[in-house]
Each structure stands twice: as structure tokens, then as C-alpha cells.
Image 1 (cartoon, rainbow, N blue to C red):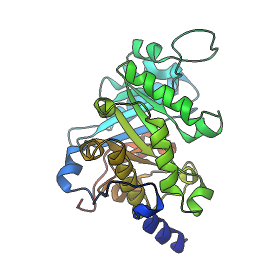
Image 2: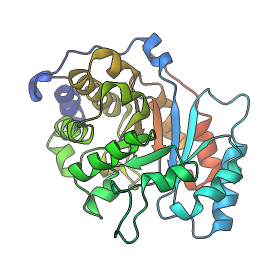
Image 3: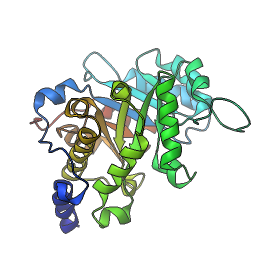
Image 4: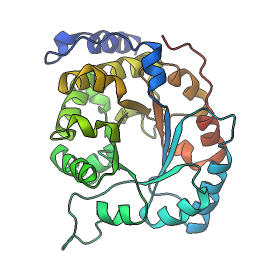
Length: 290
């Protein structure tokens, strides 16, 4: 495992492993400070009742206090709980949707459109989560359609990217992220990138209890920023927030958030526990960003 970690760090730090990239040094502290942290939770197919959702949302909102870090906070919840959760949090955080379809209307049974979500006050929506890619067969092209529709509607998108365990073991993390970023953001103009966040979620760490070391996560985040610089420009790359997801816990969040290119977290299981997620919201940086 130690060999894999060292190999990955070396690989994502080398532009020769990918198509030509703009060379990008580690973010300066001023740039880090300019990117407002973003802590978010993805409830997935949870909880099981409206009452449970309201209680959980209320408890999470109560954990945000005047001494909390100056960060954006959002919960991505099942469609049926969106309005109840919004009422429960009282404006203390954003409530977003776990997905959307590119279509606006028509014979698409079970689908939810961007206009429907916007009409109930949703601003943020996930796209490209690995469970949507793997279980539901959503392709990069389909995900790109979701992103473009959200941009068209003036909404915001958290684009999820990440490699599988076998891809990680083959040192393909950077290559996979490059493909998913380029395809997912195809057609998105520079002017819309302030409504895009990237969530790097190594598939092998989602719901497994495994978590990428801070060094692995930082290396991949820095590579993603290099990719964005090549796609757009350095200014855009420096401004886009890149979150880490994959079994983020109260025990791991502080060191992760201290990394210069990690701007937040997309939290799964721990967001279903108000005490754990409250601690993640109230993270404490233990390393100086350099």
C-alpha cells in the first residue's frame, strides 16, 4: 500500500503521465483563503420517513453557530424531503437535490427536471456521483447534459468525479479525473464556473470506511486544478472549489481540510448522524495551508 501511495503521488505530480497540462504549483495561502470552504452532506436513500428527515435537518442546522468556520454548508437530500428540510433548517444552510435529468418535460416517468427543482427553491444539485454512474448507468455525456441544463437554468452544480479501486491500483486516478472533468464540463463557459464545484470521490473510499490519505487527496486535487487550468485558465482553476468525498469522518476532516487544494467535503454516512456531521461542519484546521 505504501508503494501505491508513493507511486500515485509521483504520478499525479508528473505532467508526463497525462496530456500536456499547464504547470501548477501548490496553492498560495491567499488563494486558499479566497475559496470559501464548502461542507456538504449526501443523504442518498436515507432517512426512511419525513419525520426523521426533519429531525436530522433541524439537528444539523443547530450545530451551526457563531463560532463555526466561515463556510458554505449544504445537504443533498431525497426529492420528497427537500421542502420539509428547507423549512427545518431555517435558512442556516442550503438544501439541494441528489440528481436531475437533462430533459425539461415529457414522457420520462420518475424523472425530476431542473425547472421543477428550481420552482421549490433548489439552487444546488449533484451530478456524476459514482452510484449514479455505476448503478444507474449514467454516462459522461448524460452527466454533461445535466450540468449544461443546470447552467442554463441559472442553478449550481457539484460535479462528482473519481476512480475505482482497480484504477487507483493502476495509478490511473489522474487520468480518470481528467476524462470525467473534460467530458462533464464540455460546453460550460468560463463565466459559469463560479456555479460549479468539483467533488473528488475515490470510488474505493465511498462507504467502505477507507479514506485516502491527506497526501493522496491533496495530490489528486492539485492535479484536478491543473486540468482546470488547461481547460480554462489559471484564474478559473484557482477559484473553483474542489471538495473531497469518501468516508469523511470527524477523525479525518481536520487534516483533510488543512490541505491547500482541499476546499471542503462531500460527506455520506456521517451526514446521517447530526453529532458527527456537526463536528465536520465545525472542523478545526490542524495544519497551516501553505
